[in-house]
Length: 378
Ligand SMILES: Cc1cc2nc3c(=O)[nH]c(=O)nc-3n(C[C@H](O)[C@H](O)[C@H](O)COP(=O)(O)OP(=O)(O)OC[C@H]3O[C@@H](n4cnc5c(N)ncnc54)[C@H](O)[C@@H]3O)c2cc1C
Image 1 (cartoon, rainbow, N blue to C red):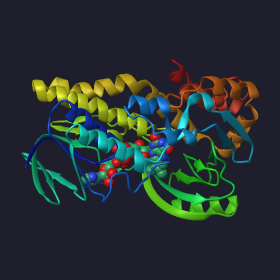
Image 2 (image 1 turned 90 degrees about the vertical axis):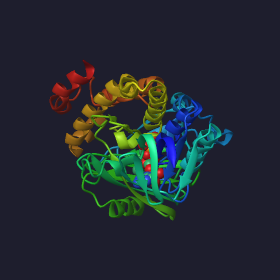
Image 3 (image 1 turned 180 degrees about the horizontal axis):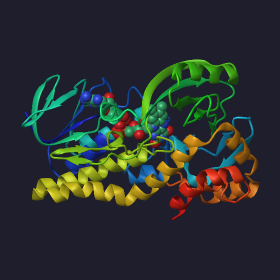
């Protein structure tokens, strides 16, 4: 069996790269080890409409029923502030449907997709799968965070996310709960899918994700669980080399999810698109520089923002609960108004910097962050 390209991983990044490559007339096979594209869904599904459009996905009409109107952020002492997010046009989508929609686009262009088929290893002429060997010119590794686990464990946090029914979930309101003792280096979140229905999740360094999420739910009140997932997230930013010989690494496997929130539908998806374009060019010219153009393109687009996000992450990992509580006291209605007006969901470091107390009212935060902040602002 021969294909110009074999992609391992039938999720956003892998399917988008396959869609691009097949649209240029090359043969592509996508192999997915699970039994269904889009399942098991391990995602909160928060994404900007502009991001979806850039990925070339026309959102379903019903997607607009799931617009996020505001984000409520809670400090360890319970103090809250709210950002109005209407302008950012962020939606909650079903990954089961999104991934299938992209799979449909890819096969329409000529790509083939096989589920229940897993990549095992690279061979001299292609790859080995559980169903035998396949020859190819290019192998695309789109296996998500599972591909990074063997390379570097230090950038991985464990997370849990339950889909639940609960009266206290409000349609259109995302909640973010900060507490460095309970969720070190990350946070807990509530993402509504509708009134009384949504996803509650948590991640943190060294936590027992199952125990931690149970504690959150116990505090919140009555609920029914309809689904539980446990998945690693990667928060260390892009890996050094996206292209290694004839292997091209895309999406979460290349560390293309945001270091601040681990959101990757848009940034990992764009990795798939840029890779697909570069692979198509390479298959035409046989010039390795054309293949390497993929990393340049992704870095031009997201490199600076990811560097800032990594610095923000460093700061957030060092801050203790007391400092967060103090920072919340210094947040004024003018600041939240300005962020509501200007924030960009996909390039959000400038808003975080504002919230970190750049206004100068807080000595502790300033001392803590002054050196790093100069780099971010510079
Ligand atoms: C709890 C949680 C919540 C999240 N919430 C959000 C959110 O709200 N918004 C957002 O933008 N992002 C979110 N993310 C991140 C987002 O899910 C990822 O960034 C995105 O799915 C990355 O896509 P990908 O195609 O690179 O990899 P993945 O979606 O991880 O897909 C990798 C695929 O490869 C397959 N695979 C693995 N090994 C093999 C193998 N050996 N052979 C064949 N196939 C294989 C897997 O089965 C999987 O289908 C969340 C992640 C988690 C864990």
